[in-house]
Length: 524
Image: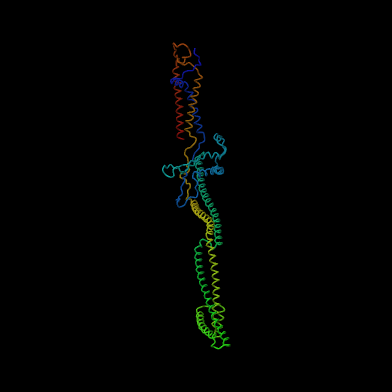
């Protein structure tokens, strides 16, 4: 005899159907019970309603070519930052206290929920970003809107709380934008003040350098050259005047010497006449010399008179005194006129020499200026470089400050990039959770699995010989005869009645399950 523990062949489709028929109630009853428990539990579980609101990210109304934004924070980063601020414990606790959210509950749902109301509210808030689906535009993939959802026990409460959250988002964005814009403007203002201070310091250095090196500056080079040329011209004219005065002096001195020589000859003639007669040769020679001298004297007097008229010696103190005496006494000698002209000529020479020295000193000074101008220009360029850099930085910051002030004014007028409600928070008409249809179908599937598992366990533990095929492999001989079932009187009627009852019960179970799922589908 073959061992009973020998592995049996896999059941065929007919065998499987026979098993299902035998264990039909082990499948139907767990299926119905699990479905009923899940269906009832789903309706007993408190409903949650979700309100949704859509906020649009509006672009700046004034074109950026006229007013550039001074806040370059990405919209997504700004939304995430505001989300962290709004979902902070302080903000959420204020909303919880205002709407009396999450009161203590002793129900089953209350046991499953977290004890921290703030954490529970954070779980009930959902923020979804909406990006542009434009496939060709420049704003492809750009954040254009975001959706705020909040779940609560009642639709009115969900809408009210979501409206509060939406308002907080819009107000927080406006406040944050203004603060960032004003902060940028304040920062630029502080930087501009520092730049102004540095510019003034650099300007003071430049002014001090120019004041210290007046006359040596590159801007005065052309003027110095012109002045030097003028001084050189004056020096040449003074030198010519000095040469003329010196020549005049020599000429006057020669005249004075010749004039004085006539007087000496007269004295010699008088001395000779006291000793000799007029026919004495020496006397004759002296008379001829005296005659020549007299002619020369007349010429000298004429020249002196002529020179007296042409020269202006009114500034000479001695000549002025001599002329005054001539007017007072009515006459003057030619010698006195010569002396007067010599003295005037001497003063003229002194004045020319003094002017020559002054001009030479000035020329030396201006030549020194011209020689020092390149070095001064290099030093001034080094100092001016810092001034120009400070001025360029100051002008740049000043322009940025003006642009930032325009952007801040734009934000204050609420014409910059801002958030606006395009879809106000909705009033939900159906609960978002639990999904009664999914709960019902889940209970049904669970019941089917439980029923099949129980049926399989029962079939494996209940070893019976139900037909001829079950004997194959258990006994070494073949079955020769099988005895059919011998029923009693009325047994068929009872069997038929029991079958109809089972059919009615099965139909009732199926009808209940279908009706329950349809109701769950209708109610959501």
